[in-house]
Image (cartoon, rainbow, N blue to C red; front, side, top):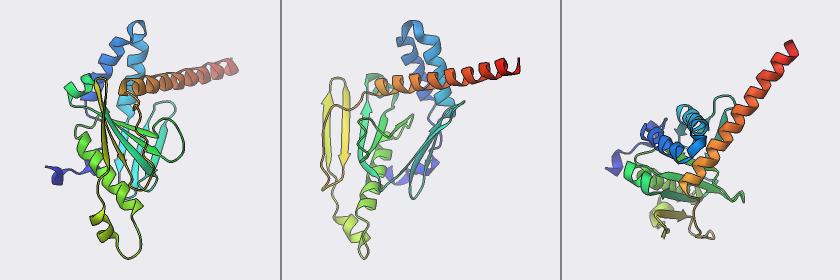
Length: 205
């Protein structure tokens, strides 16, 4: 039931995400070991935190990356899932702000109740936008969802946008492309960390 959904209990991705990452690594062909290593590091270090102000995500072994977004900053929420994710009961929730970046500020993966989490984030985003002195409850009660559903290829995309804000419906970034970018970023972090260790060894020598 939706009423029993508590996002505060979500702190780590579900183990199904690791299985999904293994499938993606196999598709990488000869780069399988490196891609699997980077995705495993991401999975094992990925942490989420949902509180009254917003959502935060952190990951990384050598260089830890942390993203904090308040509900007031959120502008668009995209829920995407390809065939493999759909079969495994997974999805990717991309959060975008008005910063002007083409990509998502945060991509939440490994949550089994993705639609419930999407609805929760959307409600909090609307509540933060409509927060005005002397009438929060009545304003929120009058708010109606503006949800546009678009199907692109084998991926289904659900876009939520604030009423009154310009809504742009375009092809959402596919989850496998996001995962590949994250894997490459982790590999760069590993390379930089190894280079630092090598430099230290050379300095000591």
